[in-house]
Image 1 (cartoon, rainbow, N blue to C red):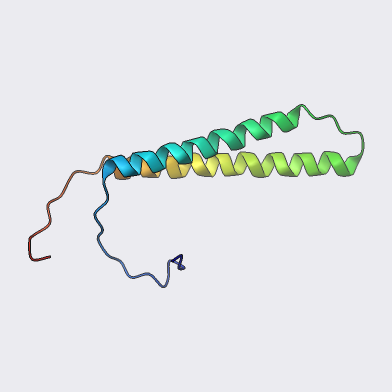
Image 2: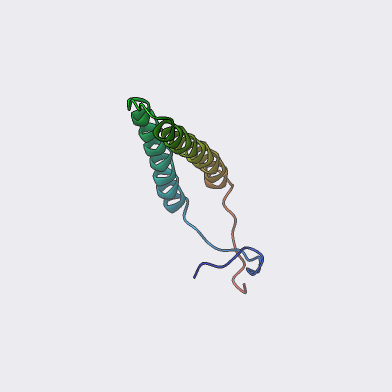
Amino acid sequence: MHQPNDILEPRLVAVDSYYLSVIDERIQDLSNDAEHLAMALSAITATDDTSKGVIVAVRAALLANSELASIVSEQMGGLILLPEIKANDDE
């Protein structure tokens, strides 16, 4: 079912705002989890440069994913707040 965006045709779909808010909560959970995991990695003390580099890289990736999830959550919040529209019966 997943298709690249350049293949999908634009179309209007009916989505309940409650359903969007549930998805938004899951996105926020992912953001929080990634941030907490990054913080947990800060507690690890490594002695060799390779291990230190791996920890720094994984922490950076987790924090980047957390930030991206926060941005997606903000976008989802904007969708949730869109005004309700009515479709014509013939559509």
